[in-house]
Length: 531
Image (cartoon, one colour):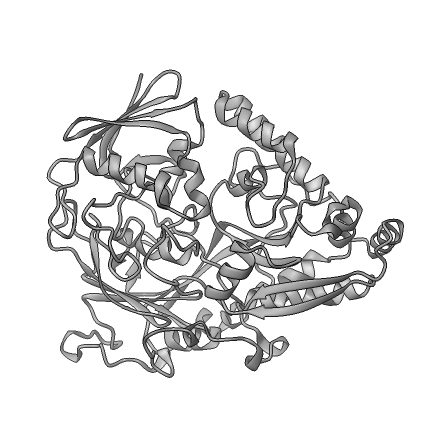
């Protein structure tokens, strides 16, 4: 049995959370809804003008609160409850910071303990013994113990409604060996389960702390939610009773900007200290010659996917799907949606995964070939319902795709949907669409092509068998099967993978410890430093 012990927690790991690029001249502002419109509380007219919270007695030379930190993001959370709301913005804000898991992914992509002081895995990969940190309490005063572990895992199986919850189905039993020892038994070996425990489904909850989760978060983490103003911000304060090392910043405000230029302006005005997701990359030149700022460019795991709804009859024909892929010049999509930043990938795998293979030559841009395929399939006058979230990068990408599809005779009618509420409900949950565009940020989400109930409804038994065999098999089988699945879905044109989103941030000189790469779901605030 292998034993794994606590290592020093390090690395900023977070989800890109559907980062948006400036709509520029291509998007009519009247067509792009403000996510704050459908909220219970009225946000400020312009978040970039909100500087009232700064205590002048505690400000440094640039006017920022020396004890606090303000970070600007794109897409806002629909609630505080990531057990029922699928949006990635919720775990970005709360996972590790407020809700801690037993284990997490570090900046090197390694699984390291958090609430588990150490853990052991049986030789057959079916039994996991977690030895818990002592003296940990939830923010409501309840102790964190093995009973909380059992409650949290079983609750994912019984009560969670998001798609990721199915990854907990493999758990057969959770045994409370003693207060600080929980034993999890899987129904069969799994290479994915422990990795899944680093995501939001691995967050630990108090049995008495799950009422009203959309408005109140009770966790063991270094921060508490002080205020949640829907459509505007989440204010966090340090947890004075935190069991581990106190974070560098006492107060952190996560602020949400529907307008990418307002986000850049807030940074230039020293109203925020860090842009967590650059939305207007063409505006980065404003920061290049200013000694106050550092531009951070790295990679992410966010695949910007042009999804096809396989429940629609038109997408049952592989020739139609292939024609759409060959009608699209993805390089131009990168230019229009993310200012030229990004990387072509050809399938649902980032280059950081060991099973990555360059598949960009599969169904390459060839409008003439696309027209011929459509003619052969009897779909020369195709009309599609193209339902897109009102995030600037998605709108820009959709408009470029629409224009290129029109050139081969496909009429893709763009329907802008408010994000997150409407898009998540009508497209992601109800499957009411033909095509859509979204940035998928969850690690190893190629496995969703083995889930016919996922919103794109791709049902391929060969892919399902390969993924199941990979999960049960040894490391070599796992990597070989994932590589084969990536090629199958690319050749089958299960979707079109427009590009891999970049990880672009801008940090004020006052903030250190910001690494380049995005390797997980959370924005780990504990690694940020005051310089």
